[in-house]
Amino acid sequence: MEASFPLLFAAVVGFGHAFEADHLVAVGNIVTKRDKLYLAIKDGIYWGLGHTSTIFLIGLIMIIGRATFLNGYFGYFEAGVGLMLIVLGIVRLYQYFRSEKRMADLVVAENNHHLAYGVGLIHGLAGSGAMILLVMTEIQGSFNSMVYLLIFGIGSVIGMLVAAGIFSLPFSKRITNNQGLQLVLVILSSLLCIGYGGYVLVENLI
Image (cartoon, rainbow, N blue to C red):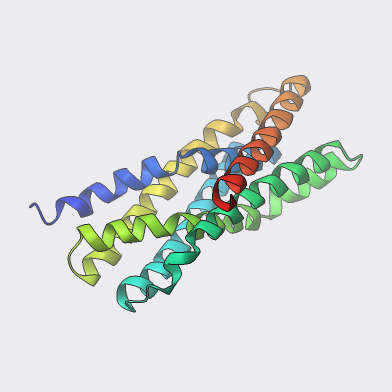
């Protein structure tokens, strides 16, 4: 029972991990493009899948392959997340205020979840170091370690689909068409992305 408890706990840890600040500001900004709840939830799922893909891949390299050469690079990966957040916020503001905004947003909303998946990949790259080192010290056996990471990833998918759904509610046509509120939220979420991204960038490079 004691040996299986960390595996049972992994989904809970993964769910909570999805609600870390850098994850929320990124996905919160992405779903400001959505006017349908199910599209925002799909963004959350794609983010979680991207996040899990990277963590699982690095886990294979470090746990199965016994490779430790990545240890010195995780700080740069974190800085990369900061840069990504800054770019994400700037691009969102540009998209919102350009004259073709409504048509561009509609096309993105209906056809493309690649952005959410890519953001998840980068977040997974940055967050994998501490997680995998923790697993390597707490979980015995390569198989159990990889199962832990997989269950952790499933938990993060569920957590982010919940978060994305909640953040998208003010933009859902079924709930409100208040353009003023939506404008304020787009600007606020973008500025949060830029500001927090700058903080993460500086924190990991200086």
